[in-house]
Image (cartoon, rainbow over all chains, first blue to last red; front, top):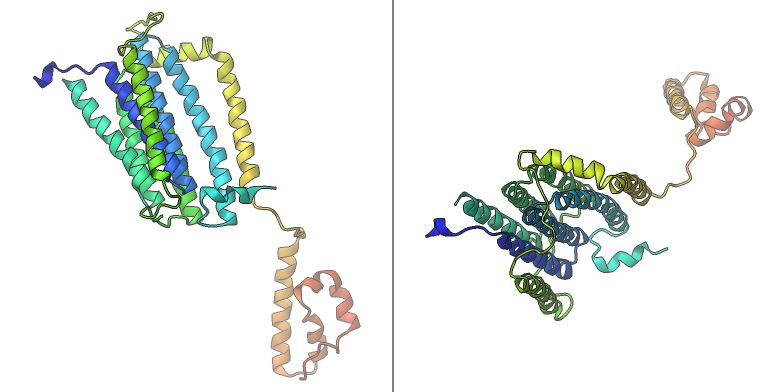
Amino acid sequence: MIAAVQVTPAWYLILASVLFAIGTFGLLVRRNPLVMFMCVELMLNAVTLTFVTFSRMLRDTGGQSTVVFVLVVAAAEVVVGLAIIVALLRKRPHATADDAALLEG
Amino acid sequence: MVELVVFVVAGAACLAGALGVITSENPVHAALSLVGTLFGIAVLFVAQEANFLAAVQVIVYAGAIVVLFLFVIMLLGVDRSDDLRVEPLVGQRVAAAVVSLGVLALIVGALASTGYEVTGVVGQVDEDVPDIERLGRSLFTDYLFAFEITSVLLVIAVVGAVLLARRARQPEIVEPDEAERSAELAERMAAAAARAAGGDGHGAAAGAERVPAGQAAGRGGEAAGGRPAAEEPSS
């Protein structure tokens, strides 16, 4: 019976949407800026999984190319975001996301 | 059958890692849970014939980005656990749950409304060509301009990171031969102290050398000749 079950692309899409929702929840709930950032990574990964799935469904390489760009943008985003977090946490260790206004000016 | 097992195992790793990220009190544990999710997604990439992207996922995400996170956590020493039992804003979690479940319902609803099928032109992929070659052709022909622009993006990100994470410098002026000069000064002071302790008649000359480090650089010659007795200890 189990052998008859086929993994359809829909499964991947639903898994990706669940991951995206978990990332959204974490981003909204957590207050540590580093963990919030990890949740953004989670959401980005869910989207890349969707892109790869669509690339397979449409039999087109464009989706995979887009994933490469998403990776590059994620790397750039992590670099700049962590620099901002370093600047923030250096001013006040254990700062939460509410303290981002400290960097003003 | 194989794909089912792979999907279930990798999907479970993804979901467990994702739940670990949002429920870990310690940021280090959250980062390690993130690695689990990233590996699970890499496995799912392999299951969908995106081998190159799976390798890149492991190298770039698990190898570079998570390590960067861990560097920041460890270097700044912010690996203090958050207390997740208290809810800082009343109703925040309920609202967040509503929003994220709404997002989930929206996405799944949109998928279900299409019957989980894609519309549009189905591309022609040559199955004999490996995926890395197809990806390379696609990147360097159709997406060449975007590919070039990403290099500019990376340069801007690096410059921005250096600018943001740099400490604000105190205006300190370091003389070029400062180290050499202070070493020489220390040597002379040691010699002077030895002579002073000996209680011989050259105390005045020795005292002249005993000048604070800041002044010595500027007026070493003057102090030696000019004011020997002023700083002379009673010897």
